[in-house]
Length: 311
Image (tube, rainbow, N blue to C red; front, side):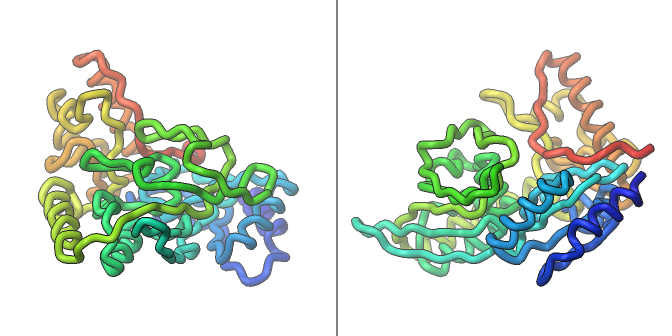
């Protein structure tokens, strides 16, 4: 079945030029957690126009697809993904322009990493994006999930977005057209974020740098950055910290196969070196069950899970 799907993807994508495609590609080589089965096709998208054409083609051929920035908060099940994973991390241009009143609008493509965006704003001495320092992931993913830290969220700085809609058309919308909630938005299913624009202010370079360094030092101290992970696994329930809840349930250090609840921060699941996606998902289920039983709290995943279970 898998090879038939791979061949179908090859046939559909064979006519495309100027695009790198890997077939039957192990996603464990590309996800930040280092787990996952094979995708029928992993496509490295080079431009927004190319992405638009690609999406139209895949829909015409009835091939499923999943757009991703850099696969930092995605778990691909061990059975792999039957369809095309569209990797957008080559769409990484960032530019800025000053507007009235001394504010500055910074436009970033969806595949640009948050690290690159934070570095860019530091170089231009623009303040407002410091809270994103150390957050893994891309601009598109951050907008989609309304990423945040230290009391600020993407919704606080974003002004507009450019989207590839489900009909294949490209549309620019204002922030007010989207409902931003805690780690969620109400974009229509199948919508792909192409770029976003953020309104920042001129700041003092030394102060911006110190704030970024302070945040990075805190993350280095609190987060298990020495092991592969997918970042925070569960969303924080209202007024509570998921990591503290998991720790309170006695689950720090608990392991399933090669996956382990970090002893440094309980809302991280780390890959000790030989974890499978099944190990990670079983550990997530164990955490949810224990917390529900002992604390009467349902932990909602923050990571995105795609693909099929292994046969």
